[in-house]
Length: 163
Image (tube, rainbow, N blue to C red):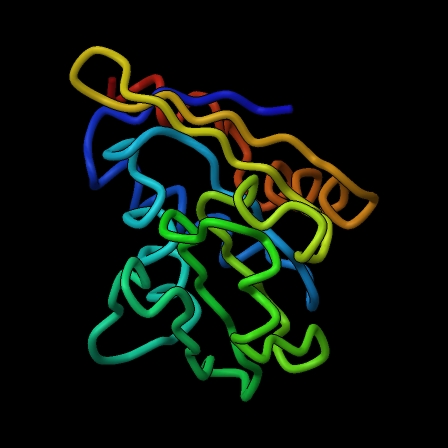
């Protein structure tokens, strides 16, 4: 588990870039937190760092946005805030084999109908910034956090120094 305090959206963008650089080939990320905690901002930064060009929309109303990545793969960004029942997800036609990266906001609303998380990202407003906790939920998630630490020596200091 890794915990960081993000002072502003630039810190959130930096974390998204770091996560993108260390990303495993296939991963499911559950993004948790209250409204306004920064889940969409982090997802947008991660997608941008993976080469997504053009508008990166929040899927609040569409429920799912699909993005081609620079490496030819596809990422899906889901926002399940408006889901009333996990059974509604079957109408979205989500095929787990089509996406190599799943970014799922409000995953608890799709419980039982989603692939299990590899990495759980919990975000909360704290003071003038955000607290983010990254927790592995599978061997893939553990490897991701280990790679993140290897590729970003002094990771904690990168955020603490600017806070």
